[in-house]
Image (cartoon, rainbow, N blue to C red):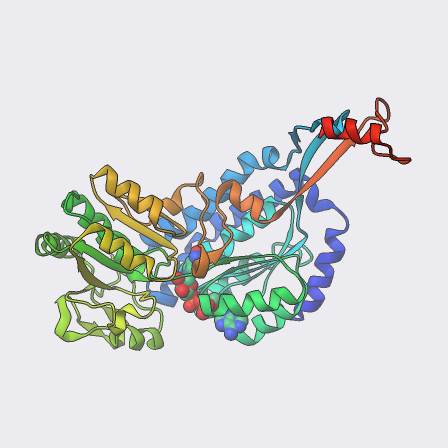
Length: 453
Ligand code: NAD
């Protein structure tokens, strides 16, 4: 398929202004919702083929997520799309001022493989809600989910409005040569830089949803039972292949042994077996090899077993880990949790401050001063106090990174804004103007201007 031709058609369609009509957008969102609901079984099947993800996890972390987004915009898009009144300063009286939410135009969404539906379709839903046309390029690594999205969406929607482009690096490289009005990318920091560079050639704005090493701190005052339950869940969800999963654990050395025991109990309780009922497999051989090479057998506290035939890696905890260890040099993105200790709380924060700004950060504590220091001293995309991962499910919060973990944000109204331009318009009365700014200039006018300004 010639993507350049499709983009040209989208440009022509955009010029008809049809996408600016909120009713048009709502109609398309309803159509998409019905399509997803009708094809739920096919969607479950495809993701199971890609990496053995259970129906339960697919529904809770993917399908329901996208459906919730559609409902959210159906409910709110009229309000978001309406011009907002702004104040007018004294110099510009008499006038009314408004901010118009204008769609950016023809946008490109590039998705990652780890939550293949959510990461391609949620930005796409926000783009439609904001009145854009959209080309979506899901990740080819999750091959079956990419194919199924194209199979169900492309026949249902005219390509001049919405199109799922299949392909890998070569096809994405071709797409990136084209001039879009916005590129929304989810993926690694390495590829994020490629996307940013390509976008700069056309001065195309970007949202970059990237990754990084997200820490979780457990202090001596934490509720260990709650902390262990939530950390184990967030770390081993999707077999650790989650951008906001806790990458490593920093625990107060005084309580390390006690807390590790809690972690062990919860891993056992959650029945993470290779049967794919409650646990996902690793996406492919390449990642399996990369992850197993990060497991230093001398440091395994729990787990460490793996089976290449099932692409299964047991939830693994490593102890006595040092910052120089291999496992601390890159984002893990798998079911391996290195545990480091600290003596003083400030020391833990300082260690994190030495790293690139993470996508997420978490702390378990009952101490208000520690909460305050964590929030005010660390820089990270978003996070939780006494939980992990869940901040991304709160539509009232912007979701995105900072520094190496990304540029921009989305979810809820922030998703709408990511695909909109705020157009400022002042409507001035044609009467009542003091004529101060017009020549001929004079000292008298200058005096008045000084007063007014
Ligand atoms: P990736 O960067 O390898 O791939 C992402 C997309 O980029 C894919 O669609 C792929 O086809 C394309 N791509 C890959 N190489 C390319 C190249 N050389 N030129 C042009 N396009 C290219 O990322 P991934 O492996 O799919 O995902 C894992 C990474 O994504 C992790 O770092 C993870 O933290 C991050 N991630 C971030 C979020 C977030 O919301 N911030 C969500 C999920 C994953």
